[in-house]
Length: 412
Ligand code: LLP
Image (cartoon, rainbow, N blue to C red):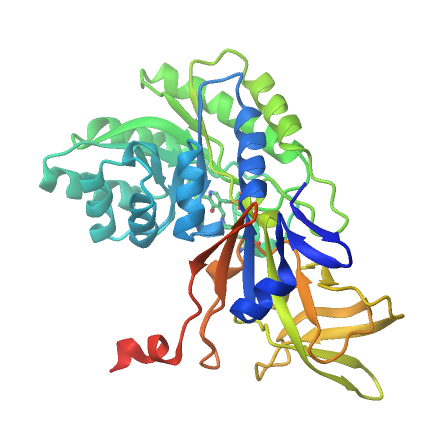
């Protein structure tokens, strides 16, 4: 459920006309809805009310400071994967005690920054990383709380690039290695093993793989208890899918109920790391039609947003619904919606049935709030899009459009 809807022949983001936003701020333009963000966060967070839990929003999905500040004000913690994300989360006012640090390649400097801030824990993915965290903590006279990321070898049945819990993936430690890792952690003086972590993939549209992973983690927890380890946290990662087209992902309430029921009365604090499910459908990308072109084999709609603005269609072949900002009611045609970049892989939609669009008309690309702006680049020396956060009738420039000067600033 989101707050982008047609009213009197034009698209509104909450109380604001998208056409007017495009005229005022130019395109390509990301537009996010505060009411949708709040609703999604609250639906997700309340789904776990039956257990002590911390919802750590996954910053990589959309790291705009205004989005982080909003979610932080609702009580969210943050899941980070770099020193840069730590910097953003702290700047947005999120308490370090609610930050968990994931990822396979943390640099010593980043580990130091996280320890200085006093984050809740590190999700550790290798023995070498554990030793490095111990060394950095020792040099700082600190003890780092750690969880190990367990790779449960479960098929999340999603796109191969965003599957992470199969044994062929680079992520986590298999269950046998994990036992060694926990006993090493117990023996090292500057790390304290406090939790178990897992993240099996992204855009999952069924609960079953989560439950399969959870079963393995619960059995593993019993082994750790037998080793007399004081495990207090169970981090189940992110991954709950959203509706882009015709997917039917479980509602967060269903997801939360299934997981908390399985966990029963285990004396653990649950950590969750949702990204896409919070922000995905809370954002659209608005673009203007520059030209239309008809060749004997194809109809092209050439728009001013490109793969540098929204990479998902090019990288994963992802589907994003596209609609006119002001529907004209013309007959449909089969089109490719493409950007100005010099690559055949630069498209937002392929072989899509869309009502005929004309030069100057604007299109809204839906479900662009997650992994949209955060994966954007300056390829072809294109300034990155502006980001707008709407709140009722209020318009907040969450990020100004880049300029040619900002593009070259680091090179002068
Ligand atoms: N926790 C960890 C350790 C992760 O690696 C991720 C996502 C999340 C949480 C959040 O997952 P979510 O709830 O958003 O599914 N660029 C891809 C998605 C990559 C996901 C990477 N990890 C896309 O556009 O689909």
